[in-house]
Image 1 (cartoon, rainbow, N blue to C red):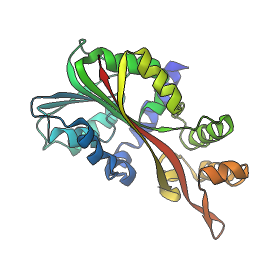
Image 2: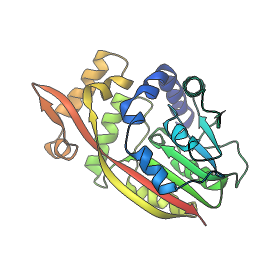
Image 3: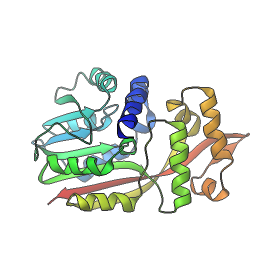
Image 4: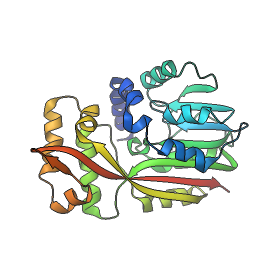
Length: 256
């Protein structure tokens, strides 16, 4: 399961590397400014951005810290991001698995990971690794899509995400993340849950491979239980879905 999931991630992100650099929902979300406000990094900090993707967090952090190490599992994605951000001199790029980081313990003042952990087969290992490489007093900032505690609503979201993106593994609930953070001996200092609305046609085409896959995702959402469609605020107009809304969590924790 684990190796196959990672193979699918590499395949998906190699094919769509430039789409993630250009993605409006990844590049222009308000949480990029918010994470600087929460972290308040200074010019001496060394930061690690895990699963950097299009490099949006690394780019933002680079303006305020001494150095950013941006990692990703997918070589094509990392190379594309390096080329896109080549004018920023304090970002260094390392090919790395989020669940087995190639760094010594207590190496970083800040560790971030944004909108990526739902692709990780072993989120417990990821959190444990993030905690391991943090210095005492260092801060871990996590942003990811989350599911409600209700099983039906959670299953619905993870199913439509998997149908849309075969590299999707699972979105966790806020409670599950809290348990993993506690187990890694990190103390949550701040947490926020917000609604995030996707432009459905853009969102569904970013990761689907053909029109039949788009139709399958759309059909699944259109025929869903009314409670699911209501919770995820499925907006339809002229027989077409034009928006869906999901939950996103932003959490900051400190290493004791």
